[in-house]
Length: 235
Image (cartoon, rainbow, N blue to C red; front, side):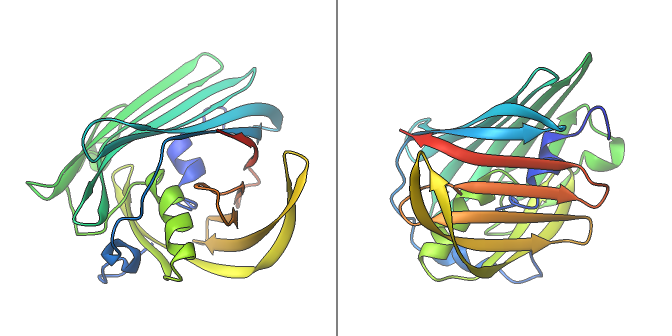
């Protein structure tokens, strides 16, 4: 197993929880009301139990700060995306990814400049991943797609996303795979299962009506690496 996995790579396929030249259908919808929340997750990372947490907080007028942290004895991974709601679209503005695995650290930052129509990356990035990459209406980063999946599934929209993240563009398409019962804080809840597979990794998410984020996420790389998150509480 890679001793220093990248959080973006772990979360993309969900986020990865996308596109051709078509505009993401969900981005055309009027912005649904979103509210601040803190979601605590039980996690499994690098074969060990971990704690995970997602937080959505206001960051100004029509601006939000969305973060994910996963920690255990070996790793401390953090990803933060600041986004705005503009004309009904959720547009990433900045993203910061910090990884500490054993003694190795990695920091990456992204800037989404919608006035210039381009995204750029800095920090511990390869020259060919620094950008710029041209932005299109509806583009999102990996983390923000977690929220979009819940929004679009509730609206009955296709789960198709053009992900601009880590110096690359990728199309992520999710398909529904039935409904299952999962346990949330000791209560049985019915969840819609959605799956995406880009050939290198498969991401499965369970979405429960009324929850702002997936209740469960499982990402498996073809090399066997896996990340699992199961929600424990929401406040």
